[in-house]
Image 1 (cartoon, rainbow, N blue to C red):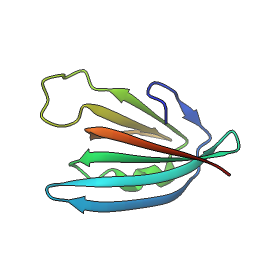
Image 2: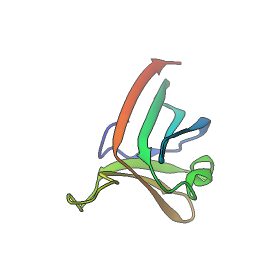
Image 3: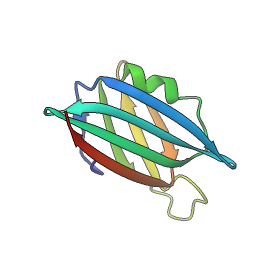
Length: 98
């Protein structure tokens, strides 16, 4: 995923969550313009909005406004009928052709 790009008409086809010490790694994938996009969010602390990814119509990543934050340097925005966000520290992309 590119920071600042809005992905529309998203259908999430994979979601994996792995605990790493006191945070989580969240891997998910979807198809964008015929290519499979696989992204891992590293350093997710709060997981209560993760299930909202499956209902997403639009998703995007933006930098956090709070540069002094101990965690949550980035935000995954999730939009359908409501807006949700997931804060995390790092992003790892692995783009594959479909």
